[in-house]
Amino acid sequence: MNASLSQLPPEIIHRIFDHCDTQTLLRSIRPASKYLSDLVTSYDRFELDLRLTTKAKLKVIHRFVQPERVSLMTNITEHTLKRFMLFFDIRQFSRLRSLAFTDITHKQLQHFFEQLTTDSVTSVSLDLQPDESSIASTLISLLVDTHCPRPPSASDETYIPKRIKYSHSFRLQFLKIRKCSMDDYISILVNFPQLRTIHMMDCIVQDASGMTDSTFSTFTHTCLKSLTITKCTFSLQQMETILSLTPSLLHLTLSNSKECDFAYSFNAGDLEQLIHARLPRLARFDFFLSASDATHDIQSLQSVIESFETPFWRQITNCSVRAAYFLVQQFLAIYTAYIPMVESNQQTRVEYSCMDTSPHLTARSIQMLFDPKEQVVRAFSSTLHFN
Image 1 (cartoon, rainbow, N blue to C red):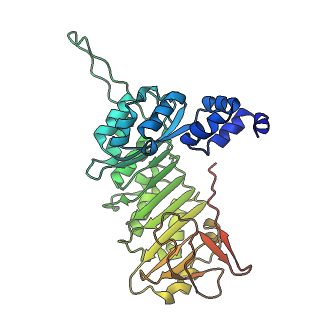
Image 2 (image 1 turned 30 degrees about the horizontal axis):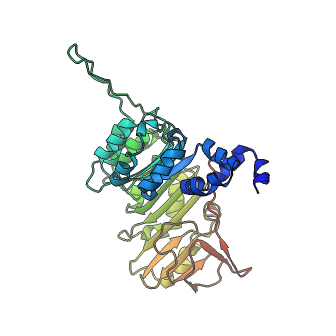
Image 3 (image 1 turned 135 degrees about the vertical axis):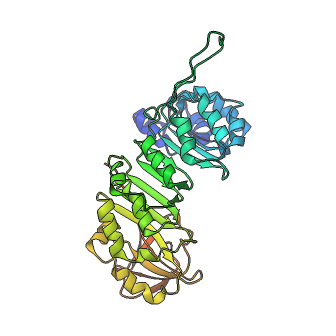
């Protein structure tokens, strides 16, 4: 096996390493041979999950992994960060690309970024503690500090100017957050113009009436390609307000909160009109939208799905729109196949799609499509490439 591996370019083997966790690389692959040991040593895309790094494992990592060869750190909490910093100096991690913080405070974040000496970070997942301040103000204060340092006085011999971070330094392309206000969302778009993907639970729109077409045009040059909102609570008008800020979207994913009734989403015509008006470049729309009011029941399935049987919906959803009545929870939902974050994934339901001749009872995963012509179940592809 080593002989065949030795014939491959190191770049190819490093690509294989991309699918291995750090412990596998250090404890299983590195000791296998001198050749593999050298390849592990030269590998520069190590990913560290701080939740899984005990003191014993950190000692091994400290011995065999140079900090500048780490590109990703996840599950950064107050506890895991303190343990990690017993062995490492954050200032040595000069090639970090992705950071994921969980249940952390603004003060802890500030301490981390003050020590960070690189501006190579392009992906941030931020889960602030619930009582923390605005998500946008936190991000901007840490990554977009445009205030000039105070000038030193003659008596201040120990003064060291703080490194200034500008928005063009941290070129964030991916951001994952919890809920944010509309003001936060706008601030994020303005201050991080290179963002290509945003993933959030909800965007709270207090008042959409003050937003006009001239307001929307301010953001026509955004680079955002993908937006995911997993527990949205907004109305159709508020949805239009949010989507109007990012006309460059290619991929939209929506799932509503259980507390929010999305009965308006069953009107395919209104949704199609909104997308044509505000998202002219949208290539795919994935969703799981539900309503539990008395006007929507099993008898509504056929009429709901018929409104989505148009060329527009077949193209933008890859012919995967289905309507279903969930028997235990007693709600009606419309959804596409690729919507992995819904809690109703494998619950018993009466389902109807444009490929069916009649509704049917099922409990299979909603990520699986049943082809009645060939009598087979197919997995839905989630692949989408951004140009």
